Each structure stands twice: as C-alpha cells, then as structure tokens.
Image (tube, rainbow, N blue to C red):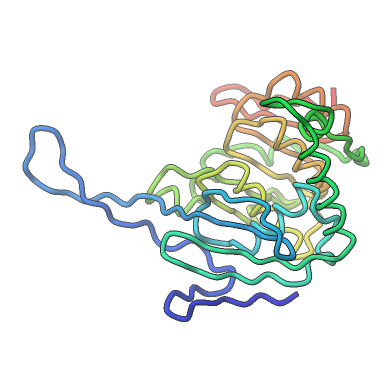
Length: 274
C-alpha cells in the first residue's frame, strides 16, 4: 500500500503523530494579565473511497493513516488491509482530504449499501437497513482467556503516563494495547473516542500484532459502537474505565468478547464472559 502526502507547503510526515498542543492565550476573571494554555488540536477529515465521498468528521491531526485503516475495517467497508490499495492525504489549513483506493469488491459492496440506505424514508433511525446498521450481524469470536488481574493493577496510573498528549493539553480520549506481559505497546489519542479506537486498530493491523493476545483499553464510555469495532477487529479483550451498559454486556457475551470494567476504587469487574 502506498501513502502520498500532498500540498508541499503543509507536509507533515506520513502517518505522523499529532503535533504538539497549540498555545492559546486566555485571561482569568478579574485579572488583566494574559496567560497561555496548551489546547488539543483538531481538524476536519473528509474521506472518499474510489472517489465516492463517505464521511467528514473532526479528528486529532495525527496518525491519520492508522485511523483510516481502522475506520475502514470497523465500519465494514473492507474486510482486511489487503483491500486497501492506496491512501492519499491532501492537507489544507484546518482540514485534510483522504482519498482511499479500495478493491472493486469492497467498492461495489459500499455503493450497494448506500443505495439501500437511500431507499429508506422518514427520519432518524428508520427503515430496516438503518436498524441493521445500528444492530449489525457480526461474526462470533473464538473465546480467549481474560488477562490476569495483576496486569490490571495500577492501570489508570500507567495509562496517564502513556497519554503524552493528554498530559499537556487534556480533552483527549485514548485507546491502548497491552501485550501478554501487561506492558503498554501502543497508545493512540484523539478528541473522539471512536477515533482513538480506530487509530489503535489501524496501528495493530499495520504492525501485524495479534490483538487477541494481551488486551485493549479505552478510557471513554464503552458504548455499543465500540463493541462493534472490537468484534470486527477481532480483539480478544476490551477493558473500559467507564461502566458498560446492559446492552453492551449482552453483545460482548453474545460475540465472546471479553469485557472488563476497571472502576476507580473497586476491583476489576469481568462482565463477559459470565
């Protein structure tokens, strides 16, 4: 797969990590003194597949190749990285255009799905296709052992050490991969909780890491969409710092995804498998 970066006057390194937080001036109430605070950066990212516009979203401007790989897998646009032929990034002030070339099979499936969605009527989550998109049919995973409890000890402190961007600017979610020894191997940060997990999944796939070993941690609320992404990416264990919903637990159990919650002041709780 080839990645090209366009716009010579604004050329970040290919798949570069996010730039340093931007220093922004502010003034406290009752004080004439100006101070500065580092704030997280964000940019608009537009993604097209074979010239067809698919999504525009706000993301943190780093690790965009990993994000596109993960987004393509977890949104069921491609079934594997071998169906992504090319990623071309064009950078502009406050925006980025990603032109992605995918296989003919994946592109025809994408177009067919869009035609079906266009045939629904009404508003909100309406029509059979829209409901199928919210509650999709997913492949059940092969069961995998839960990580030993020792690997979850001091988890919040280790995450804080790994989140370099959030330590300086705040306002960022993280998704992390811990290996079989319980050590942090990868940490991806983004303003969007879905984006952070997509970036991590893309990085795992690109590195050829078997994500069924070890465990993945999300610092955000564990919503049903994150379960969808985890199952599609064939993760073995998903650990959340926030309590899951009942429906999230049902889907994790149904698809044999290990789901663990690490509360602030209580021992880790295994919700799946029961």
